[in-house]
Amino acid sequence: MAMVVKNNMSAVSTLNTLNRNSAALTKSLAKVSSGMRVNGAADDASGYAISERMRVQIRSLDQDNRNTQNGSSMMKVAEGAVSSTVEILKTLKEKVINAANDSNTDEDRQTIQKELNQSLDQIDDNANMTYNGKYLVDGTKNNKTAVTCTHLTNLSMSTDSNESTALTLLKNRTGDQLHIKDTDNVTISYVNQGKTYTTTFSVGSQSLKDILGVTASYGTETFKASFSYSNNNIIGTDGTNNTVYTANRENGITLQNARTGVDNQIAGLTISIADNTGAIKKAANAALDAFSETIRAQNASEDNALVFQTGTKANQAIKVGLTDMRTEALGLKGSDGVKLNISTQKFANAAINVLDNALQKALDQQTTIGAVQSRMEYTSSNLVAASENVTASESTIRDADMAKEMTEYTKNNVLLQAAQSMLSQANQNSSAVLSLLQ
Image 1: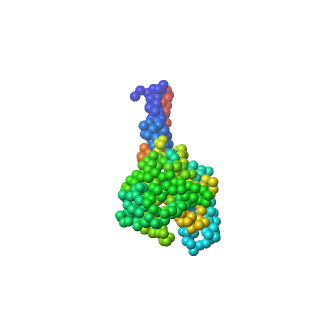
Image 2: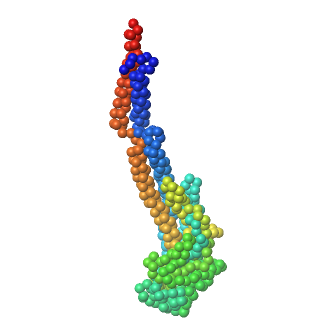
Image 3: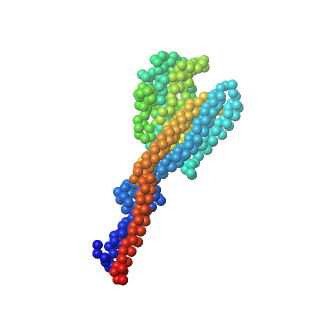
């Protein structure tokens, strides 16, 4: 090679090598210090974009999990309120059964009434429980519901029985005669707005439709039920316009109240047959007094259900509607504040069925809440697993193999130092020309 001084190509070449080694060392240093293979889009453009989308998903999944846990906490508050109500209702049934026993005087029943009144107030307090300022089971978190009426279904009478069958010809589910005589007496009790309306009359030749269409009284007030009848496996339509069937899809007699809404609900229907001596006919009563509430009366409601966002996309959510657990909605108190009366044996006896229906409402709500809590536990577990798996996928793209990167860093560091040394040597080559000038 010619000896030149204007262009020291050895130095230029070595300098370029030094610059490349310096850049490689800088990248290696960034990877080793951050622990990531991809620190910016320049390192791996497509990998960077993919991993960033994964990071968005990971953060979304983690927030979904927090949402689910918060929702579960809210449901625990609601479940606690309803559980307390269920316990109160169980105690109240015990009390009204006691009140229905004639070993008690009416004064004793008045004492039990005081305890019942306090318990009903506590049920309303339970319904006003809040979470983060939100009322849960006071009826303000309902699903969208059309106005409905009380449906009472009896599955204890023969499937060929209907509203026109004479009482004296009625049979039980197994086809045995109920042995009701025309000289027997029948007592009907309806509970509406906290008031128990009763009437007693002779069976005669009347049918079920006849006896349930009579006028009953509560003091000077009167009440006349207005039922439509069906004798098939279709109970009716609920507030969401879904058809409700009997549990076993067998025929049963269903009474549908013609009056709609909570104010008009029949909170309890009690039918009692006694012979002309006053002796109770238990077999007949077991079949006739088995009308249970299958569709509850509700007022129309907009869609105010709770929505828990549990997915990374819009509308990936769990929606929960909570019904009204106040005493009025449970049929234990009227809109004017009149509470269920157990001051007489007849009133206490009628209250037993009212509490059975109230318990059914509360247990239905408790079941709904419990099912949602269980679902949220599964949702949380799924979200944690999804976050873990996406994180693992993102790690394969972004995270550095530290052993490999340390090896690369060491190599680049040695090469940089070698290039620096060689650049120094290359810069000395031009000085050799001076020896020609001596």
